[in-house]
Image 1 (cartoon, rainbow, N blue to C red):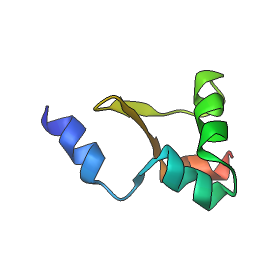
Image 2: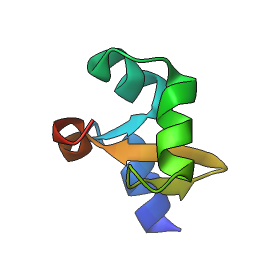
Image 3: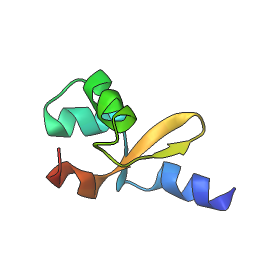
Image 4: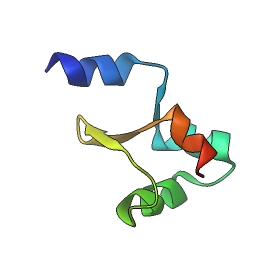
Length: 58
């Protein structure tokens, strides 16, 4: 449980919306990239979090 909370509160793990804003795309596009395996993400509390380092691949 502690690991999930750490990711949720870590500013380096972005929500799909935050990631999309930084990448200049809609959050639904981020979600599609995750589903297609083009973007690595972790599921935390039923929502995806994407590490900020993935911005270099977007």
